[in-house]
Each structure stands twice: as C-alpha cells, then as structure tokens.
Length: 99
Image (tube, rainbow, N blue to C red; front, side):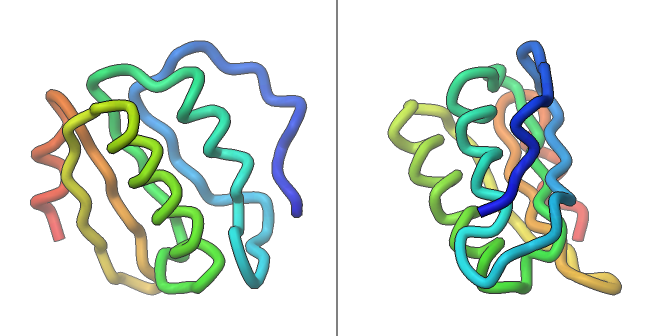
C-alpha cells in the first residue's frame, strides 16, 4: 500500500485526503495513523474519491477509529465531478450539511 510516510504534522483540525493515488482496497490507509495520533476534538476530514471501494474501506476504518475514541461526529458525501466524503466533529460539524 502507498501513503506518504515522511510527512511531519502537528495536531490538526482539517485533513484533506487526496493522495497518494488510490488503490483497489484500503486506499490512502496511512491517514489512519495521522488521525489516531493527531486529531483535535474539533475536526474536519475530507476524503476525495469517496465513490471508490478503496476509499470507502478507509472511511469505514476512520469511522470506527473515531467511534472507539469516543469522538462525536457527523458524516456526509458531496458529489460533484467525483465524491468527497466529509466527516466532521465539534465546531466543524455544520460543514457536513453543505451538500
């Protein structure tokens, strides 16, 4: 599986996942460790290409991770040229209503 392993990040409240190129299953799976170790209680996660199976696999794992961490969130999808899956919690939850 491919993901960016040399990215240095601090805690974040916005994570846009649009690379590396997707894979057939569990695409962009490396984002899970970033979310697990660096997410704030107020967060907005946007996964590009949410219509693809690989990204859907990863989104399902993100949802499980957030639930297990006890974080409240809401999720929605926006379909334009491709599908963006939006997962938000805390003060950013209203972002999921724009679709």
